[in-house]
Image 1 (cartoon, rainbow, N blue to C red):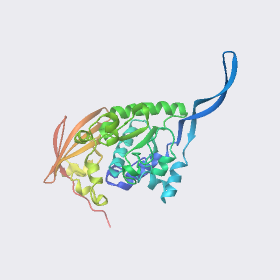
Image 2: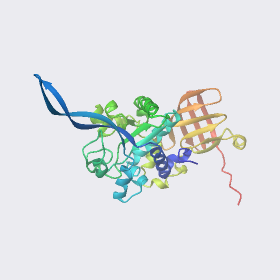
Image 3: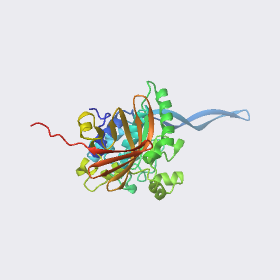
Image 4: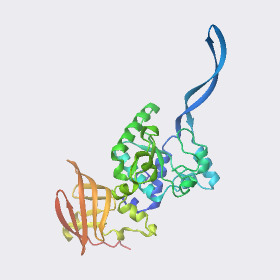
Length: 334
């Protein structure tokens, strides 16, 4: 399985999430258009007399910054993946994972050009950037390594740079419309289009006038997966802690023939599949999900409530309520 074909259980594995984010970073060309000021001498005439003056002109030039992250990683004594991906906040990485998966599903082909940046990396950055130490990418005044709360994202869709620029514009507009579902937005909009950050973070609040506490209460930024990732012993989190995960059927006979399979990210059975795009735990045995479902003949959005009690699963949505029994686990032959 390639990193871009992340498994359904990836939401339970920090390593899997990081591998996917690294693959999104790797596929993006590290090239940008920056403004460069140049002083030139020109001859002007005034009152019939010629004289030479110095004029400052601004040019747009292409800059290849591929070398910058590896250089900063080397100075920090890390691999580039450990530096760029590992330096970002764990919860933010999970949001990026879900956002990028949705962008991929929408055919927008996201590519990450920048993740974590320490003070050295910020000092050699060009174009739109914060003062060294103040960067939300991970500056020393923002918490440093492990606390990066910003990333830069473009689209890699297109054969030419012009086509990729058009794809990036479409992708940024998509983020403006749907990003809040994943707890992510663009603080600077068109002033710094690729820059994305948590909508319940201070940077977004400062630039967009949003109260971070109200954004956090909105429930868009967190879900079951992020709660698991933030658990004190995240690696120990497994499917047994999410009681709806497993095989289910109307009865034991149905379990043998065609069980419904539910993971942390999707449910599938009877010719229908539902991808969970947000989840919230209501109680010890109840969850709410927003999902996109499809069959061979139709697609629809669903608000799903799952309740597990005494070995039975109750699935409720706009299309009705059904109760299933847990299918027995068949031991493998030894």
